[in-house]
Image (tube, rainbow, N blue to C red):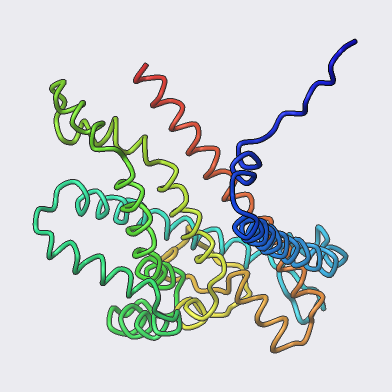
Length: 306
């Protein structure tokens, strides 16, 4: 007669059985609270996304996405806002990625004065927590007035560079610190130079943290409205980015500014939710591309090392 096969017991269950009844009750309670908190967070996220899609999808149309606002024709369109948003994201990333990653590499790998590094880290942490309205005022005074750029998209992008640079520096720096020192010592011991070691060993090993910082920066850029209202303007007309002056003369509202205008100034909440859907799609698409590129870069570097 066959003996019944006992069901496998997980390590957590086996460890939990060894505890006293009071300790076991405490462990079960805390684990249940953790599951509950995670479930509430996921439920809130799903509810938020679902409600935005429920309110915004009915108002989306091809005409709404590919046309501009016209009072005479009584039409609503967000194509200029989409273009302005994409251009601001591209210009901001062009500046913050080299500056942020380069600064983090210097602070982690080259800087020898630990007091200076500590002071810079404290400054970046402080700057990352400053309200965006203060950056808006500084950007308006420095870029729009002192440098005489006016309310243009390039002034808004420069202000966003200053605002998001601390985030890139801190996330990249923390990611670089997670790379084991043995990796660096092994590469240097094999005769690799300092920069070659950083480029081929340290950066590929910390690419996940760099991509995370990029995603956080993109999320803050896409979701920013106060800075762009003060520095980039609120025009809803199509801009000639490649004409005379280009970005240095073009001003306009991004999607977040357009959402604010529809919701607060015109009380067109259905159109505001439609703009929110477009923002969700753009943010998701950019984040997905960043994740894919990060995995591909990490995979390519791993193949080269093999």
